Length: 53
Image 1 (cartoon, rainbow, N blue to C red):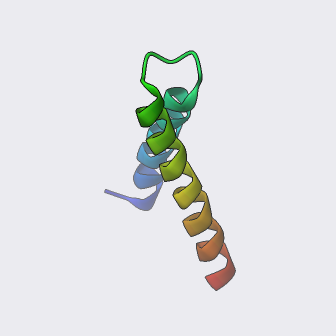
Image 2: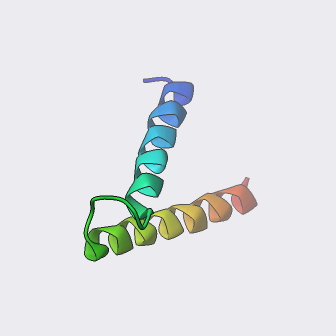
Image 3: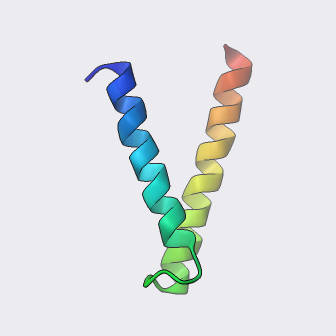
């Protein structure tokens, strides 16, 4: 898979995670919290990667 394809897939995953974190989603609180944790880790890794380039 090319890098642009990976970016598209990762963007879809991130959008799904954001939908899960919504308070009106059908997911329970523990799953919403886990999705928030994943998004926060993702943001930290992205920022860390930006500084190393």
